[in-house]
Length: 512
Image (cartoon, rainbow, N blue to C red; front, side):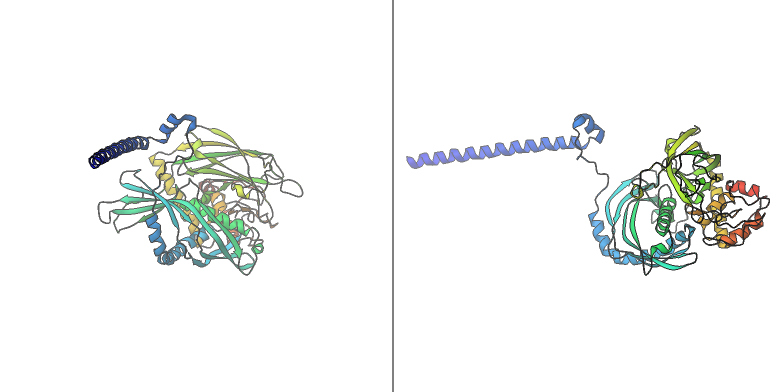
């Protein structure tokens, strides 16, 4: 009897245990299905939807990653890097060295690579975002980080100074690279590739400079000159909207639609400046203003002597390629013997302008646009400008595009003829054919009538004979100006014109 009752109780307990287990599994399965449905609904919500639901309790840790992780690609890149680095070093030297010469600041007569090796540490791709922004194209944004161990030595030569090897150490690059693939119907199905660095987030290239077997003080301001050169190349050649277009695959293709074209004209009137910082030991500063959207197209105002509240009321026209991303840079300088001193700098975003609507802006001047380089927070005054943006139609766009190419080709011919040392030397001269001979304008240099910066005076139609020349090509520029400019006297105050106006002033004379 006891055996039977024991077996019965065991069977009842076993059946109950199995029924309870089945009920629990069914309950857990239902809960999982419900959670999966909730997660699917949440996954379909956008950032704005979540903010509406959560209100002020929206958690900051919630993120919406738009870049896909590519750990597999980083592993392969690390293995391929020794071969990629060797090939890339040769390509970079071949393509970047001409840019260093083209954007070389006036205080330096030669800037070339003495040694270039990308090291053994491969860049890291944090993520990739793929978009279809335009029909027939695939746009890929690559979040790139590189803290490598390259060996880069620049051979720097300056007037009256022997070549100084400058080493770039602790190089770090933080940027987002945009790659656009232009699709084609023939194999390899890609007719061209467009490469650029996105303006936002702003590309960061950090490094330290060290003189090898010498001192950086041998060339005053050498660090700032190299920084300006690197920044000019990145901003004017690589940073969006500027881009590099590479046809590939051997397929005949018209890349004109991929190239950067003028979008509009910005009319800038430099009105006045107030409360400028005095940089002189005796008397007051002699200020002038340099305005540009692209570093290769700088224009400057006349110099107003001994005045901290100057009034110019001078109007210039600049070409804009992309109103959404480009900015107008305004720099105020003090003309001085040797290198001119920057009194302040400011920028204005073109997106804040409405086409065909005049706007007056009062810009507060800063010592530097890089907050890390600002040594003091003292007031540097302000500069008042008037702006008017005109949107080009198709016909105006083509005319401006051809004129822009003509100006650049003209500067290259001047450089090849030995009239100027680099394309950057021609910035002031090409903009006005008048200037200060010795005074450096940021990264440009004036090569004009009235060589007063070093105390060398010039007669009518004759701009010095190379005396007091600073930088390369100034004596030749003086002879060039003597052949083409007539009817001007030697004065410290100058008048600046646009490239087209300069030809009219000179009777249409062209450089030989």
